[in-house]
Length: 292
Length: 309
View 1 (cartoon, rainbow over the protein chains, first blue to last red):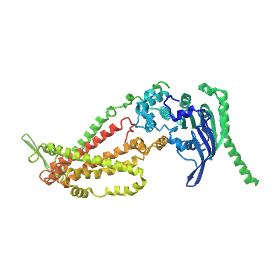
View 2: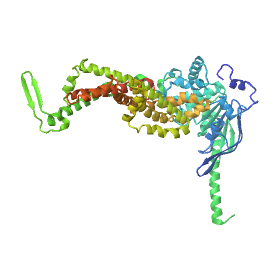
View 3: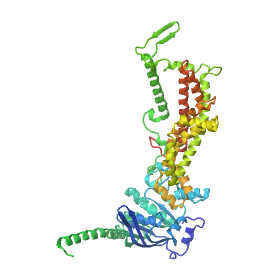
């Protein structure tokens, strides 16, 4: 945690880690009503996330991982089931400002300087001005954009803008950060660099992070656990424990264990394609040979 | 990632466009283009009179030269289209029992501009206020927007005397007429602009549990500024028109409206005076729009400005 006066998040982190899980998802279903009937996005999701973890949600497009993230963040509600954040209903947790969010696009306000963009949540939460400016400076230093406080977003590259968005998410020391494919729009090299940055920030702030991604290497590199989801309707198919050492570096990507884990996740994901292909063959046989 | 230069940002000093003088001095380019267009108009004006106007009598020293145009169009006669030098020359003649025309017109323009400004400010606030109310209440929007639109279909020439009779013949009633013309474009632009924010920024504010006034002040209003200003430019011109039209039935002795009435009366004997007045009205409108553009540049400093807005 960034050392600061006592916040509810800091107090929660100070209690024994096993006491209250940061996120508890129990039996969550989500159905979207559309013109052509309901679309079941999520079905029977059960997941518990403890303090200090880095959990990735990975799955094919349309599997509901972004929807699940939004449900945790109370940006949309579940059709069934409970979501508890810090032991509170997600709605209460949002009003208590228990979490920060980072989207795939930086979503910065182009009429504000970089520093004032980082201060945005602090303004909404009515932090005093000196406090806001100090935090903004500290966070921009943390993401190594210390000299860019007075620039405007359009003067920064995409990767730098995303770093500003990350700094903004950490501005008010939330215990939980939700990230929805934050590096999805970046090229591979920038992405790998940003992964390292995020690792560093995560270690220094000791937050809990839930991270949605499409990239298997990214998921394995960053996480303590990878949750593999099935295609629509989204279910938790497998949870892969990533037992790489906590301090990960560029070299980690060349270790044998890393490749084994990437393969494990890839096979869990590929299993769906094969299962679907087998289903098609079985259906064809039933039709052709009349096997009932 | 420690050096800024390696990360591909653009230091502001390097943003000056490369190319000829025209790209490097946009203000100068604008002035030259404006001057060019004016010269073109002047040339066409006098060319029309040369070809189809009244006979020209040019006296230089003791030598006189008469040119009789081949055609005869009434529109190019000296009464309909006075020579440009006549119009310019009359600016230095005194109005009956008073200062030179140019001074008189400048004073009238300032008077009109002051009233127009009050009407503009009131109209802009009213328009913005309505916009804010309508984006927060679909019900009120559906109920009242048709009336807002309908209000503009009534001719201002009919509204002005009604307002003057109701509120008395003073600059205030004239300002009300200007407000009437100004609030509409601003209201419509506000409704659009206040809805033109990035939806994900709205979700971000929701994740901060921001209140509705906070979302309005920190997100919706700043996002609506480009829309508002494009409407304010229109409204600035409309407020000048509204003020001049409002001054016509008001009986107020000052202002461009009174000048227009006076010189219309004497048009047959001195058509160039009315033309000079028309030119002043146009310039007043331009000055006001220029002020609004200046305010816009100031308020949106730092934002990314795409080439054409």
